[in-house]
Length: 151
Image (cartoon, rainbow, N blue to C red; front, side):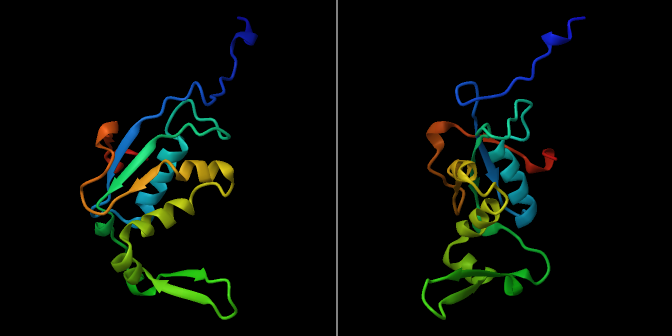
């Protein structure tokens, strides 16, 4: 047997096959949903996964306002930001953020699970989050994905 015939195949931008996936967030727990969406965006579910290449799929998340948090996290979980001025540290609870912009809760959770570099920023652009069941990606014909089937 010629051992040199087994080469590790590394994916690149031209060989990657990207799909559009549709995820329904209704009744899902935020962290579990976010980690599975991050894996889909990264491409870790594919046998051709390459760590330094965007080989993941484009993911559309609908019904962002119907996400659930366990325990008392709606009141206790806070999101922190800084205005850039002295004393400009601002805190927002999860409930306030849900009322103001429900899509940003999922976006913040998924973004925190992606790499903190240029590749992570590129992967984050492949995520589209919508409130309600209507989305603007009908032309791409996204395939509905059941998150219970994904490990």
